[in-house]
Image (spheres, protein in one colour):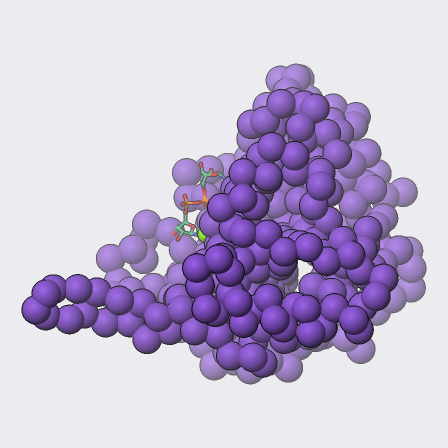
Length: 353
Ligand code: NAI
Ligand code: MG
């Protein structure tokens, strides 16, 4: 039986995960699929109970599981701890590293009923439907770094191995082949040697995916194109830092942070989590939007388990609830139709029927 390690974490993580489990339970019951869900501690909750942000049994369970479903971690209570012990570094980043998750994926799709919540004009965002794939293990963030005297200086090295580039670019080609078959590789090959290498590998792999139309774009232009004409993109693949910046930019195309699902993958294995944090300001008040977590659970069904129909049913149910005018507080809208966290979860379960 497929195993899912469930890590609610801190703050609103404790409120949104039960809603995603409720929705998964409903959809899996209907289709007769059986999964084993088991909860483990991570983050501040784990520090309080066990003295460390990523206890051994949590790590072992995540390594053994087929997929991990995570809420959020962190909060003011643990901010005064040394950086390495905090929920963020000691918990989530350590877990991502241990699982060797190299591909971060954020699908950005405009839900028609949320067009008015976007920061951009309706005609620009109406048809946005793209996936940004960010390389997670290499580049500037992990290259050699240091300081020098005479003259005083600091440096970070941007280095990529052939293997790191190949596996992420292959991942992107496969995904593009399953979608609208357009892949845009984003780099800075006009000035960076690592980007020239990246380009060579993209061109080397392209003949294996003849059905995919490939383009290569400089990152500064890509930033401009994302706000000028975002519907031109289907799948974007890029290195770690460019991806960090472009995914935040692209995330604003789709509306609220409370809607954004994400996955960090290593092959089929994935850690699925909403893109937002633990929202201490609204934690414990039944106000958090559970839809990003519910949509992350839908991604899990599709990406790790190939249950495309079931994943789609969840996405359609979310669309239906929003089309009916229901909102959580972060999405604004008609005050008479604002639902709490639990009520939004119930509404999605109802829409599945
Ligand atoms: P945040 O994403 O938790 O909150 C930013 C703002 O968005 C807040 O006003 C919050 O109320 C709102 N918000 C976030 N998610 C929401 C949801 N589902 N529904 C409605 N409103 C929502 O980011 P912030 O405040 O910078 O960080 C708070 C804590 O979360 C920190 O300890 C931070 O380190 C941690 N964090 C954890 C992440 C993770 O677990 N992956 C990611 C980002 C931050
Ligand atoms: Mg970022």
